[in-house]
Length: 162
Image 1: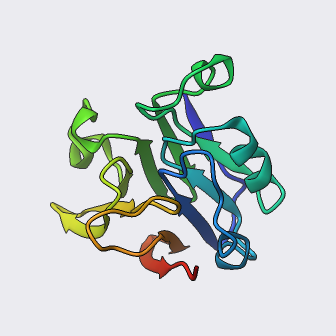
Image 2: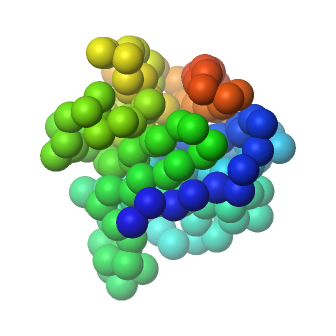
């Protein structure tokens, strides 16, 4: 199923992943005024989604470490249409079972690695916000902001303050 956002000239989306049950204190400020928050899995606790809902509407996918009744209700993959832009969200990017370019995705959003990364391949932007709560490999806690205006998509990685 494809989720569609109300038509608008521009959108601001907060992207978070790998919270493992905790929301760092810098997240509400980083996501101030976003239209949507996307959680790319390994949420850890339903309370995380409840806290994010206090900031903005939330779309979330189940990660490999999400268990329980609340988690079983989350999809493994979500497709979101925002104006002319189509985003696909899943926790582990290697589990994407479609060619993103042929499927018409403008961006693929994932988590799992705990490493922030943004790159483009064949016209598709791949976004991993890193881990908000448990960064690895010397990276700081981080989230991402996606700015959409018309057919243009820009990504900003945000380093969270302790």
